[in-house]
Image 1 (spheres, rainbow, N blue to C red):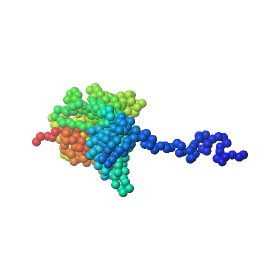
Image 2: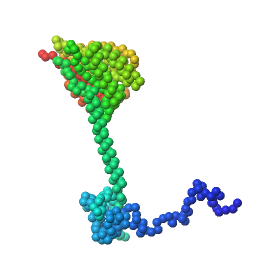
Image 3: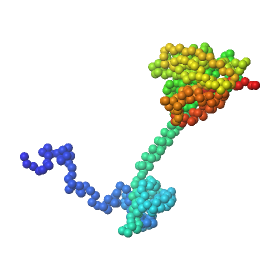
Image 4: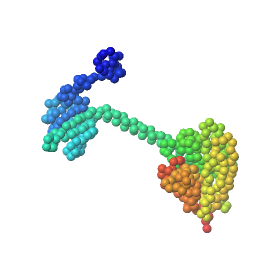
Length: 419
């Protein structure tokens, strides 16, 4: 079979995909062959000015945008005359001097004022054309329509402002919800001192740490400090349920171990499908005004052990045992009695403190740890509730980005005996 070289017997082009492609000889027919028309009807505005800015040449695109005729501008107006008031100031103080020094300036955002007074945002690029001996002769400027870009930027800015307003609204809601889960005013047993502090790890999420100190009958006081698993609205719901359950339990049966068993049952029945649980220390405090100080019966459900800072400067962790609350259908809890003498301070805290990762840490896993906390407390003792909480607050501020979890602190102290 004979035929033209390169021909496809199936009628397909050289590419084999059935599309007809122009030969190299056919490309010139597709290209612009009228340079003047290309200049006049370019997608961007073009103009040439003398070194003093007088317009020497301007294309039809820019004239159409501005609504002027060529005779109204060429030889009569300067480029800066087409700018808004602010644009003229910027042109004289920045644009023109930089162009003179550098020989070009690109992508400057300006606004042109059309004949009817309307404004048109543009991006301007100017280049100084030099003669054969290097001396500047004229300025060539390309003007790009930036109306769509400006509209996009406005929409983007509006969207950003809306997002910022929404973020601020969310932060306010989070703050209000967080405050609702903590006592508005920390009450204090007569003759004793108390202080508390809560530090949220994030302003955008409700934390799960909680505490309270409240009066009961017969001069007794209930107190607790806990930490709910997770964050957000779900954690807030568990926190609210835990707080009110413990308060109610303290009224009906002022036995800390029984209160934790009751809370364990409530959380297990309510959240066993979602695995919601908490750690908590719960106690019943009885002031002992005859000798000074107080006695506290405490029970713990998987929570870090409280610290007792003695008046003699010693520090002791109060040994407690008990599984986390709400994770198992049945759990046993035991009471521990703490006797605080005059000058002693009982310090409760959540694990956000001991599990923080400071820049320098002596533990293998990089956490602050209970040993470091004991040494820190030893430097404080003897102390009182307000000073102890203030010192821990300052300590937390030094952890920086290493503090990744919410942290709550509650301190109860007995004033030292008077000589």
